[in-house]
Image 1 (tube, chains in turn cyan, purple):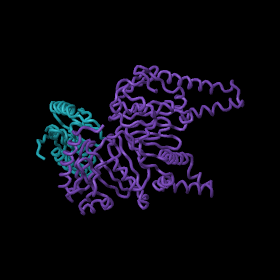
Image 2 (tube, one colour):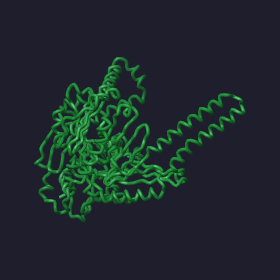
Image 3 (cartoon, chains in turn cyan, green):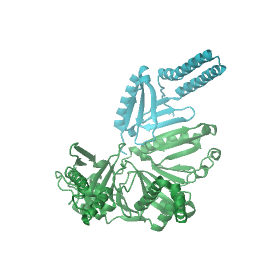
Image 4 (cartoon, chains in turn red, orange):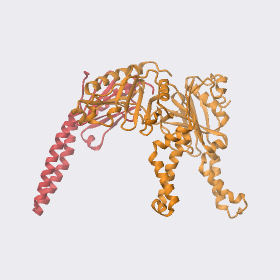
Length: 154
Length: 438
């Protein structure tokens, strides 16, 4: 299949990395202070373990970010995601029932939004996170328009 | 004629609140017994009488403020005294129409009409209750309207013909196999029940000690589940009529419904492990629209409709041929290496498609076969897990509007899966574009 793949905004990666780094940093600082106060080596070992875990998670987050993608074709939207479980969803425009655009507090701080497509099937799983707000609005409007022109009955 | 002129509002049957009260009505009847037999004087029973009066008044008011009529292509129901509700149900979206008759309703010769509509929110229009003799003509008229006829254009003979005479009965479930099938499918449950009964006879003390109070409640609920299933599947009859598939059945609570052609989202054939030596299976169809889980005499729940509660595989496949005219045959098995990933599922896995349908089979102990019309496919998903990647396998999920049927091309060769995804996408698009049958 040859189509133009788009990826979520770069800020999503920053956000995801921050979500790993901030708690790790907190844990390391707390453990460091505890180690300095008690003089116990266990705290330092735990802090080291936290750093290793954070590094692994960091790598995973990077790969997962890289796996996200979506492509608008003439008749359907393709959404791919997942590192361990690679998923590719094909959602025909005519089958879309409604489109959700959500933005949590963190996403909002980074100017991002998540677009989610719903069909009559509960199993449909088409979510595109970390779109810049203009891109999310553009996608929403375009999908709504395409959905209207191609709508098919149940 | 049941539905008069378009501007005519109609009320439900005056006995509706009594029937809708269900168990409460029976309880009230018991409350009144002492008075009726003269054991109790009216002054002693004042609290009971007050409660009953309030309930009766409430029921009467709810009947008084509820009215319905057919407007152009909609069914309108208005209800509520303080919070007035005006509900509008577009008949073009009707997926199926059920006639439900709980035991109490049969006593009073009334029936409930339930219109199931499409859509994710899954609206259900309920007319509870309508006099028994009016139900059939009304259902036929609503079905005719749903088919695209307009109010007033329904030929009177069609509306008054009662049960359509031209229908062809396809299958009737016999009682013996049904009982056997229910017992076999929930064998463990029966074993527990029997064990308890025997234990109770031998030494009541220990058993009641083990059970306690909650145990009995649990047992009772289990028995209710079994009973409900038997009750609704008793002598279930499938017939093919001009307006769709007719389903009738039930022991105490009678149900009758019509599934319109082209509204079937998926067909599923299930073979539970204990049925397989007997060559039995169950056939279910998935119809879009969700049913609310409340109300007395809930005879049918969820979206899955059982067409054949139990029957020989050949009979079931005969029904499948009616539902799936272009049934894929000669399903192809997955590559042999799948055995290493899912040894129990491997023997059951296969799939095949034609231009209009996909067929898949799966299951470990319980074999499940699914048929999905490509026209009804909502979305397609290609999934590859870590083990599958190692073995160069992938699965393609075919999502349909139902919740119960999961048609999956499980564990196919990666290249085949990718090809199938592209192929099914194109075929489904072509099927959607084709003018619908309904």
